[in-house]
View (spheres, rainbow, N blue to C red):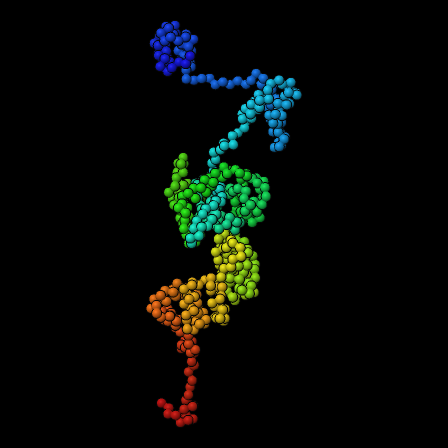
Length: 493
């Protein structure tokens, strides 16, 4: 019989007031056994004892046999050769004369396994000391660069003690960007942790995984210079670096929504740098006693000092300058000044840009191109050649790819033809095309401005064959002409 709460309350109070169990049972119309069960408060009618009973066929001997099968599998440590429930049942029938049903054994095996298995969702709470570790990871984001939809890779780093963050974007998640990003991260945090926790991406790991991972040679050299230990996670174990896993999503939702519309990656990275500083200054992690900023200040003194020598993170090659004054780097071409024709130069590829050097002096730099078969021309690299070969000016690729249509149309109207156009391009190289076009637009539209007219607005003197020298440039020695005057009868004062 189900005893309602009101009856249960009446029963308990009556018993406490001294009424006998017999009288309570008679008055409430319930059995004496029920009154006896609940009168002293040793049970409650809303609580039902759970039914826990193995089938009679699962004797202690059968249970021991099943557990012995589990133990044997664990000792052998063979993933593909373990006892299945069907195999355990067959062995029980053959070896123990088991007479029960196979479904009974299947159910028992499942229950015993659950008792011995740790749920995969279980997460161990972790604690880190100041300066102990940084977790790093890659993510992806979409932005608009000059109106073009572009996918970029976000590098995220997080100090494990203070939870301070670092986020920057790169055009590729290659080795150059990976190492460069960590250098920037060290500068942002103001030091280096004792170890860095990362997954098993090929950019860092040559072979193996987890504690058996072998790092790429350059990453091992990089970690040796900055004196930190490498700590690689197990495959598909994002929980081992949960702090930075959360940061990848947090930065995407909070720093990159709405979708950024920018002119360059540098502009976006500058914004992200400021966003990270604001996070440090204002954020507080739930269930932590202090803010990120206070904990970061505690951690800062525990970080190792950044070495004076800056590790070269670039992918460096030596390449020859061809007859078109271009250098090939990873299936793309980049121009250099024509005076370096047929010379060997050094090309250093970084995450977002490349630098071209000759005898340790930078002669050109570009935003790095990750397409194939592209050529980047700079007008200033070819202006000297155009002055020698002006007839090619309107068919020149460096001119067509760097000069606006309005400037080209203006040049075709100049009375001096190709030579005047080259002079106009020289002014563009020296003063910038925008300033030259502003001067043109300031002159009445019915007049075709000449190069000399533009020069007058720039206060640039016109070219002249006459060479003017000042007294400072030519030294004039005084000459004694006394003897000459005496010889020819000149009056001597």
